[in-house]
Amino acid sequence: MDGLISIIVPVYNVGKYVGKCIESLCGQSLRDIEIILVDDGSTDNSPGLCDFYGRRDARVKVIHKGNGGLVSARKAGLEAATGEYIGYVDGDDWVEKGYYETMLRYMVQYQADMVETEHYMDAGAESRRVKSRLPYGRYSTEELIPVMLCDRDFNECRMQPYLWSKLFKRRLLEKHQMGADSTIQCGEDMAVVYPYILEAGSVYIAEYAGCHYVQRRDSMTGIGSMGSREADRALIRYLKQAFEADAGHSGVMLGQLNQYAKSMLLLRQVSFFDRFPGGKKLMPFGGLEEGQRAAVYGAGRMGKSVYRYLETESSNGVVMWGDREYALYRQLGMPVVPPEEIVGNQEKYDKLFIAVSSRKLARNIQDSLAGSGMDRGKMAWLTEEFISGSYDVLHPLLETGCG
Image 1 (cartoon, one colour):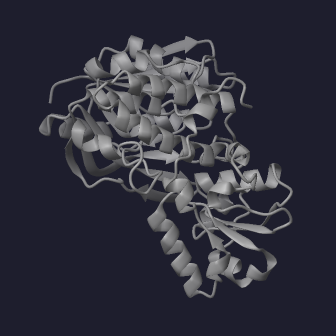
Image 2 (tube, rainbow, N blue to C red; image 1 turned 90 degrees about the horizontal axis):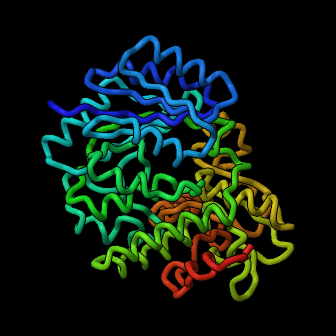
Image 3 (cartoon, rainbow, N blue to C red; image 1 turned 30 degrees about the vertical axis):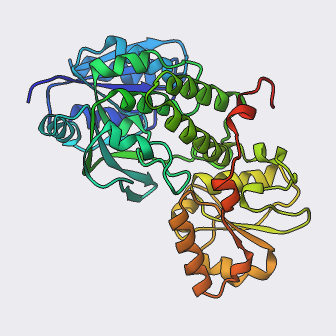
């Protein structure tokens, strides 16, 4: 197979992890690669490690630059790249030996403009495979657009936005990576992936996983992490402009963007919804009255967001936080309990918020808990009015000074 792959690795203060990342790239079964390490102003031992591997392997290029953020680092890497194809790996993640050889084979075999793979989520000693949200196979752009950002389940991105689980064609990527707003600090991957797909002709979804996304206690996956309202606005503003520029799909994509913005705010800025009519806490879930006691089920991104909101921005607090994968989250230092404790102590709280993104998953959780004796009347997921109603969040979100 012909075609050099350039792999761009943004590096910022990941000295504990970046050695494993680089070793996994240097050990790829596909030898015709270049590895571009972009030290984005690290203040730990990351720069020295990058230089060490640059001296050891001629395929490794090292760029040292002042801190400018993830988008800036990726732009610097792409400017230095010479490959026909581009891949990305974050400096604290790692990939299996055949990862890029396999993706290149799919790219060539199916004549695709992009290949997406599944991946593993690593937390401590646990490693869980994250499956694709679309059936495997080759898709045209027209087939993907109706469900690309949000599907009928409201906030399920069927095309996962991660750059590091994909292989791109450089000739299509340059416009979207180099044109991305460098001030975007959340959703950096989305700002590239979705505009890229709108221009691409075809995408292949592979039944294969070879990238390991490492969850760290000190990373953005922690309970305490929260994006700023301005960072959220920067992403939505950029995507709105990109979708409006695509005359053939703007209507569909702007509708999906409004739904996505609801989802994003649930994952990052739950307090945004306190401004809506009624003024109740957690309005999207039907509301929580002052003085009511709350419990949360689900410790993924939405669960963390709802838990953090209740603990820091309301007087209600959280009585209990549960998840089936409680052991994994406890390894990350999160106070999560098993489902049986949620059911066995339900007299301690008034409402249990099922904080997950998928309607199907929410129903399965409710059925499982009810089967163990949970009072269905106490469980709440997103209301149909919020999901299907005419809540316009784009305009208030993008208003200047809506803090």
